Amino acid sequence: MKRYNQWGKYLLFMIGMTVLGTSCNKKLDIVAKNVGSEEKEWASISDTRAHLMGIYGLMRAAMVDNYGHWVYGEMRYGDFKSYSRADLKAVEENKLKSAYPMIKGLTDWRRFYAVINAASLFIERAPEVMRKDSRYTERDLKYDIAQARSIRALMYFYMVRIWGEVPLLKNSYDNGTFEEVGKSTEATVLAFAEEELLIAAQDLPYRYGLGSQTYYGEYYSVWVGVLFNKMTAYSLLAHIAAWQGKYINADVYSKFVIDNQAESILDLLSVSNLVNPTDGLFGPSTRAQILAVRASYELGEATNTGHLESLTLGYPIVTKAKPDIYVNRDTINKIFDDTNDTRFGIDSVSGLVRTNYFTNYNGDIPIFSKIKIIRNGSGDSDFSIFGSNLVFTRLEEIYLLHAEAKYVLGQKDEAIKYLNMIKAQRGLVPHIASSPKDILEEIFLERRRELMGEGWRWYDQIRLAKIKKNNVTLNSLIENGGIYWPISSDVLERNSKLSQNSYWK
Image (cartoon, rainbow, N blue to C red; front, top):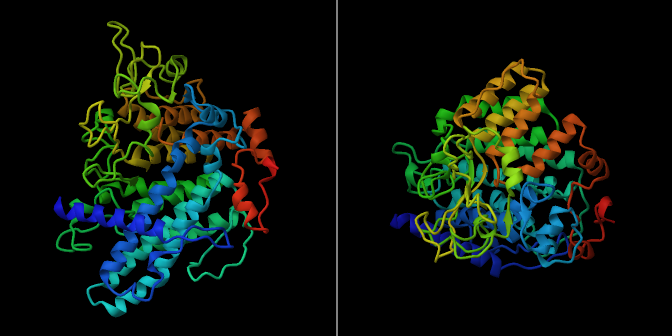
């Protein structure tokens, strides 16, 4: 643990140094004049370690700023409602040009380009270290660059889902000479992300630090669930393909993850293993992950902001009187319509409520408590410091994505098979082929239940509307570009080659 704490301190140092060392530019006003630009950098293995951890730190900061991961993914036409915050209510209603500071912050993409720039710089400069420091091996270089490529690809996929067309930058810009760059099409950006991930997937391991082969001097127990690996790359590839409607590719990539889950010690989780605050998926456990961004209390990374709990928890779990967002009882009852559901259900005999996903169900405001990692998971309500993992994707999610792909490809029996694997994990009656219920609707309903609060609801609605073409509101938004966010006026003012997204002009 002492050595792991040193990593945490190193990471926090690098985040701070990166922020302090940033400067504006004329290309995208990227706040990313990296600490590694000086000649004395990129000389030893400690430099690559620090810079790689710095990229991970910047990535987390970009994803959680203004609660972005959850506001982007859950609030628009979603299940969560704002209790009293007008800014969150505006997002609910797709009023994304409202003058609230949070909304204005979320229209600004520069924090994502800071990650991309740091990753590009690493890809360009890390090979120098292998020539200068014999401790830095070809294997380490391969692993490190593959991680940087994967993070860069994730950021582009992230931005395409939020803004649609975005500028595509493939090189770093830390020398102060920048030129303005216009947008690239979604297809161009996602093709680049796919290419990067396919290259990275060849070099990424399933697990780091196995046997006697340490990675940066640490064994598997330190790296499990922390770094991007081969399963991360293929999971992202599956999602990029599904977002584009390329379900043949989505089928292949998601099947790779399912077929090779044992290589990364992945398994479908029970609800108790999912929600347990000390040993669950979102907590400080050492569970294997596909893609989770950690914020460990032990490493000094826990905070009272930038976590879903800051929005969803209220009394009696924390001292805050009411949550900022909640799911109302009517929606809960509509979604969780099977009394046997281990995530949430009301026993038909005793009337007792299962509280794995919700607390205070019979109170004024139900509390979404699926994720409640106070400090290290064992903290009490007097200390609203949260240390939860931001879980981007997990094995249950990939199974349901695979079922979606199978349905679109006309393989309905296979779609039912993978859907029922998740239903069985949650105590639900299996779907049968003769059921009058639409299979695809059932798959997305299961995603709605299983992934609630994990940032998927908005994007799932878009994919479903694209397939079914029966949602008047969403299909109109898709056709007119209304599913994307407006671009920050500050970004537009600094780059004459950019124009506002058409829906928001």
